Image (cartoon, rainbow, N blue to C red; front, side, top):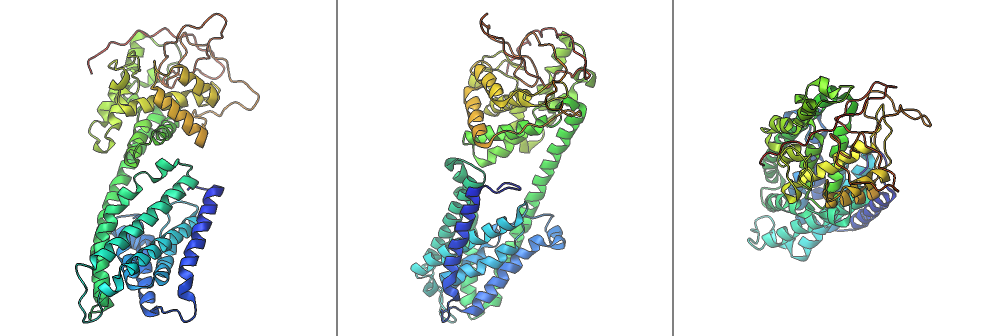
Length: 505
């Protein structure tokens, strides 16, 4: 969901889910309905108590910090409700705990309402499935032993029904709130949810069997101990992930401080890289990695002397060669960071070109790693559409036209097409990246002398095809590695860079 504004389609979708959840739970509230209210109250309270620690700062710190817990964290309680109660009553047990659950991002109220509605619908579907397969009878009661292994069938079917309904609903909210295409909205959701819900489903069955046994509900509480242990393990994973994010932020801040004229460039390249990757249908677990690749693509600038990055005059061939070493510097810096995965290759090869004229190794075509081809397009697009203190941004259509013109020679056409489609769907909001504000509306920035070769990348000028005499030459793009002139001063033209020496990959 959006941070502040929920799209109209998402509001309608959440409203329909709330109406559906109310219709499912309403029969339990009718006078004379055969509902074991004692069991409903105990299970409702138990599920609510399970969700409370995630909101408690003291307990959350004991568990390892901020612990984002999903529906699967305490799924055994919900499955036990589905096996022990009629469908309408089972739906009721999920609502208070879902409303109490921790919400990480705003808007809080719609997210809680959505979670409560989706969980109630999923529990209702699970209880309906278990009831149709004779689950309550198979559990036994009191001294009657449960009908094992037959009881596994209704429990497994209930867990599967819960998982399917929740996956279908979650995919729908991603499609309506985030504007994702249907294939991307549901991609990977069922696979990630099925394994944990199946494992936790066995704990839910055990809890229901103990609840019905002569030992009563107290014995069933012991089943929750392994669940809290699993939450603690998940908390450690979350802390490690937070440490990864902190590492990335520190590196990016160091680059921004050193090269102040491209501040914010790294984050926008990461965002554009995710847009491209999502449009290509990449799996969710790769989206984080491609975002890291985009954010850290210029981390090697930390190894480039500041006097070269901020030089006001033309670069000498030697200085140009120093700047062209930044992909290799960056690769060396992140070589030992294991969680970056494919991002390391993207950092090294994001200046390779499809025709083999790039650097550092002169790779061409499919020899260039996929993530590097994604980042190359995102990098060039942001360089052309960013407003700097000395240059006004190109309009998005102009930048896309330039990317399309260079597709096949410099950029992968698939990545260019994916970016264009993603921008049609989501739009683009570039920001001022220099320390100085953009020029006021109607006032042109100080003129800048065009470079001998128009550039479309963030780091160097790209060779251009010949322009016929009856067509205007394309306007050169601002490059991220090019030093900024002082306000009001026109820099002298730069010397053409010699072709980099090719090294074996």
